[in-house]
Length: 221
Image 1 (tube, rainbow, N blue to C red):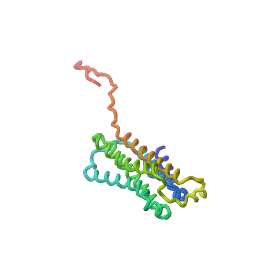
Image 2 (tube, one colour):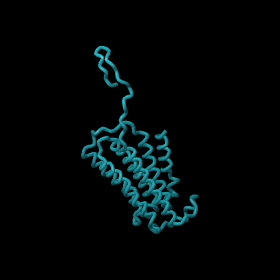
Image 3 (tube, helix red, strand yellow):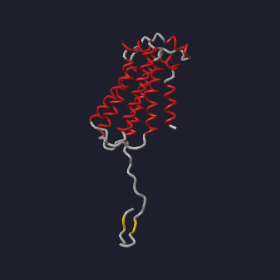
Image 4 (cartoon, rainbow, N blue to C red):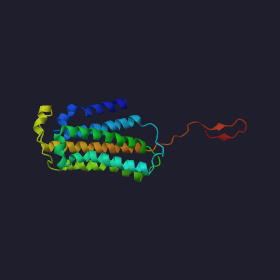
C-alpha cells in the first residue's frame, strides 16, 4: 500500500505537465519539490523499513556518506532559491528537468541512509539530533526567508500561470505559499526522522513460570 502510494506520488510529481506551470510559480515548484523530494521518499522509507540495521557498514565511511547526503539534500533544497540562479533555472526547461531529477535522486538517497541509520539502537541522542537538524534546519531557514522577505524573484511568467489553469496570484502570495510549503516539508521530514529513531519498547514475556517436574524448581517463563 505504502509502496504503491510512493510510486503514485513520485509519478505525479514528475509529470512534465506540472513542470510547465511550476516553472512560472514559486509555490508550485515548492509543491513539486515536496512531492518528489520529500513525500515520495518518505512513503518509500516506511514501506521498506522492516529490520533494524546492524552496526556493520557504519564505519567512518558511513559517516562520510551521511555528511554528503545531508549536504546534497540541503543543496538541492536551497540552491534553486538563490536569486542569481532562480530565473535561469526556471526559464530553461532542460535545466529545470535536470534539477528535478537531481532532487528526486537526493531525496531517495537521503531516505535510504535514514532507513539504515535511524533504526540503529546504539546511536547517541546527540548524534540523532545532529543528523535530524542537519537535514531539516537548512530547509526551514529557506522557507522562513521566503515567508518573511519581499518578492525576491522577477517571475515575469506569473501572467502565464493563468494559461495553465493556476489563476492570477500576486508574487508576494506566491512566494509566501512556497515558503510555507518548504517549512512544512522540512518539519514532516524531521518528524519522520524522529519516529524512525524511536527505540523499540522491550516486550515482557507473557509466559508464566514453569515448574520442573523432576526437581520441583520454579523457573521464569
